[in-house]
Image (cartoon, rainbow, N blue to C red; front, side):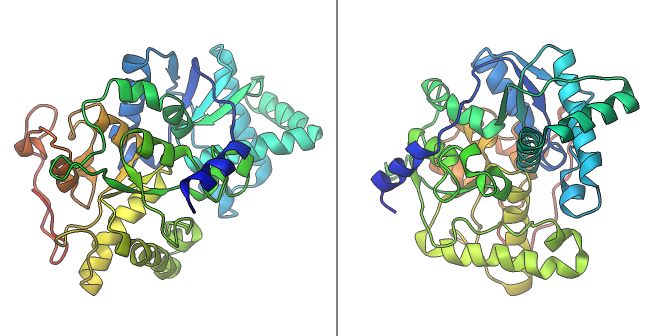
Length: 357
């Protein structure tokens, strides 16, 4: 779809995003596989933008994966979420910022359920009080953390060290934006730009100097799908989903893939390695794969943060080709060094996927 058509749709799907005083709920997957992303988000919000963000050490999983796999009953999930909201209320915050897309979708589902069925809200209050003695208020504003980076994308760009421009050609870098399924597919009005042509990541890419790549399978699932992957016998479906996306985007020659779900970068990154090693097929340039980034990592790159402090060495597909296109200055020898300068060890080279070490 042409840009003007997308912008017409975007106007129909805008949402209120708070500007300050956020209670931050971390992601189970993101803090384990891409811990530098959450660190970068807090650094950007607090140090670059001067925002008040409370990073709680007391919250738990939202139960999202268990709930969607029919392991955790909805009544239990509501009580767990009620406890999260109680922790927020006890600290005096009213704006809830979820790092995880699944959590964001689950919180949205529960808030919509409580609004439509007030007796379930009272049931959650009763269950929480019986279990913990706590009470809670529902958030005045619920946002995914990609919403917040999108809201402040212009302020971030004002502090830029790098625009998304290939310094060797002068042309915009081409980015695929991949939106997590739980962001807006179930509740389109809760996502910036809706479900079909969401704006939240596209807005970052375009306003930071890049070009958004449109391709046929742009809204196809990354391949996580919970039961596609968690049930071992179903993992072929997971690979097939990712494979379908890679084949669809390949002719458009993207420089990178940008995601806003914690699971999506893991699968779009790791399955490139798996496909290369099992089928001998690589994507991207020179057999290197297509770098996959979280929006926090991309914001950190725009701001010139050290790539290894961002945790980019955690990726299976090497990010150095993208950094080199940006004219990025970084210490290549520090890629596998710990915070104390010690050597963490170089991974074994794959057979087919080329990597930078």
